[in-house]
Image (cartoon, rainbow, N blue to C red):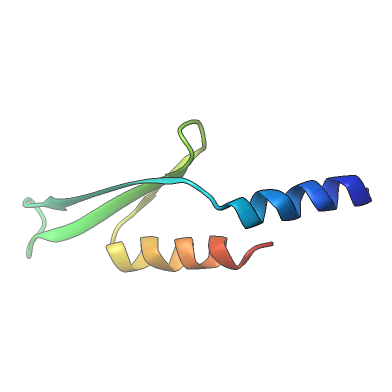
Length: 65
């Protein structure tokens, strides 16, 4: 168990990579910005109806050990 915790701590200290995509939907009235984010290149992609929601999610992820 200690070995796993040490590995997780080292990975957290090395940083994280996220793929972020932001675009504007012109069909929305008024036009709105949307976003998707994925951790690394093989992580689960999460979609957000606003950039603010995406930033809030990323902030929460960065607070995790």
